Length: 476
Ligand code: AMP
Image (cartoon, rainbow, N blue to C red; front, side, top):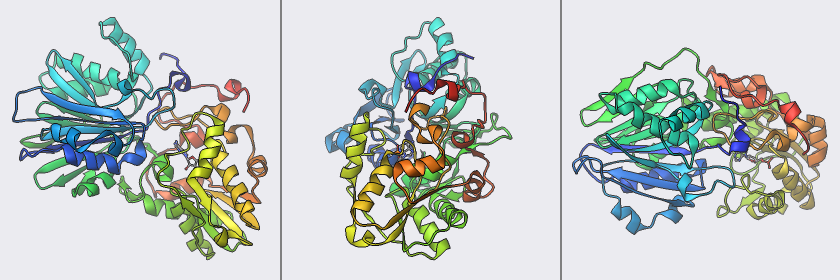
């Protein structure tokens, strides 16, 4: 396998995908717009829509994409131009430096047998191997490697396949990693989920319209009913004669990403039968059992720490309170390139409600500590506002290892838990006590669901191009 360092290549992706096919022929552009808006939390860097008319001339794809949030990129006039009853959409999240329009999706490819548009969430572990094969066959690559590798592979396989879904199957047999794909060919919508089920993908229906989306919250947003999750390893093809499911790639071993439940997914989504909200409540309750403390109030860091804080409060009997005002018009702080920018944006995004915290012993719950910037800032702000004690509870274990399947994590050099023990971290962030979720309790969050929690335990569900983290480590 080709050796590469996911951090250096900048291949990280955590995105949202959406696909829709209106069998009655109505335009789907605005539904994609609303679906993508509901998936905005999965990516704020760029977004795009590609549509086609299954009743029109074959292979005409109208697409529009841009940098920014869905409501910034699409004006009403842009949407009106996107005429067609089948389409795919994408919201993209990636590290700084890769914010270019060329990297925005859907990727539209014109090839010898027609056109295809592809929206992709995830990361492959063998993209470079496949890319080299393709370069050999003359393809030219400039942008997001993984998505292009997949699209070019489908195009190449299509030449010797009877149908596009056969080409997709041949491609899916070659790619390894975590992925959710929605592919539009002129007359078909195809959804693919990786055999481990690392990335979420579900199916819904509204009247005579089928919809696939990264999360069920996007189905609700367009008035569709949730039908089911796409099975790990399933290739689902929607045509005018209905749905066809190919399960050839299904395997026994499943490994759903725990980080979807901890942080990524929206609270009102249900993934693989588990409500994200319920899982976070259970996580918070587990924290209360493992790390009880005498305190006056339990508060959560908006938004992803709130449900776990509620769970902690319910289990401990300590009242839940709102301690922050969140400015909803500021983007996520995590992705800001420099430490200075990150620090100032925490303060711009969150402010402490002094009247709530003054003189109180506070349990402060967040979903994760990555670099420690957010927590250190919030504790300082709380103490400045008069909090007597701040006891930090984190609804995930120490973040230690990289994700090769598409969750955006900084290099291990920046992971605070990599260099410091929990006791040291407690001191560094200025907390009065610190409790991280135990690995055993992660499983409790989601019942018996088989998980990938490699970012916490280094146990990857498939072979990955491992970096020796200890040796790789230089300084914070
Ligand atoms: P940090 O300040 O670097 O410790 O980041 C911690 C904050 O980032 C927490 O409040 C999390 O909600 C958030 N976070 C955790 N993981 C991610 C991720 N992969 N992408 C974006 N934000 C994240």
